[in-house]
Amino acid sequence: MKKAYKNIIIIAIFFILGILIWYNFSDLRVKSNAKSPNDKSNVALNKTKNNSSKELNEKKNIDKPLHNIVIYNTHADEEYDFGKKITDISALISHRLNNEGLNSSFIKCDPPKEYMKAYEVSRDAITKNIKKYEDIILLDIHRDISGDHKLNPKRMLIVLTKKNPCYESNKKFAESLLKEINKSNSVKCEILLRNEGILYYNQDLSNNAVLIELGNNKSSNSDIEECMNALISALKNVEKTL
Image (cartoon, rainbow, N blue to C red; front, side):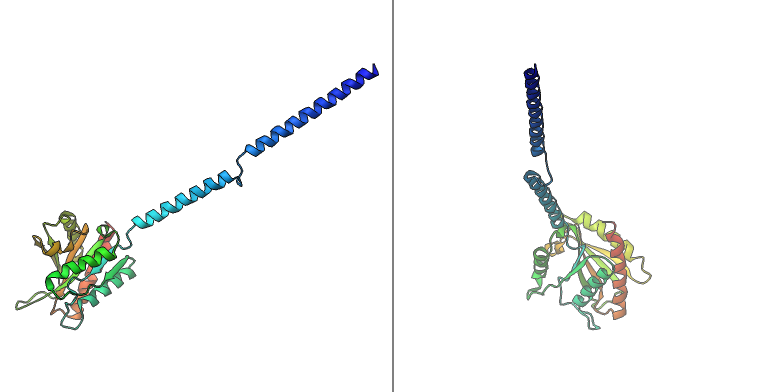
């Protein structure tokens, strides 16, 4: 009888040990299969996600224009009788726009020996140095010449080419500028339409491209200062709506 009890106890002990061993083995297997933050597969997954986010941010930066406004001078040798060159005025406008919080850049174009190639030179300067130029404001700044007739020294003239592919959008932009500039008490602005112009005056490069004449060769320093003030104010207001 005692021997029978002894065998039962031994069997019970082995049974309990078997259950404990099975339980611990199962628990260990579950833990080993569980996804851990330190698991190699998770590390690879997190790395992939981080790389994807980085690539997305880089793509956004590539797609985003580096400038809101680009100012240049096709006829960079133009100057006013008071001694300032059109390039000096344009660089100053760009500087002041940046001070006003707009992202502006000034490109200096070297005037070619052949006058008729000036628009080719300025076109190359834009396409080679500016990314996403079709999405930004392109301002080709000139000064008029009075000749034998007297012109308003505070007159600004916006010149557009009608046959250029971006004419409708350029016209809309020009009309917005015109409206804002003419809010000035002294500066007056007009729009002049031409059929084509040389290379469309490069206005086919952007939906917001215009040629602007600031005063004329007889304009004084103060005249041009008022023209600049009116243009900068207009650009600040119009740029917000684009």
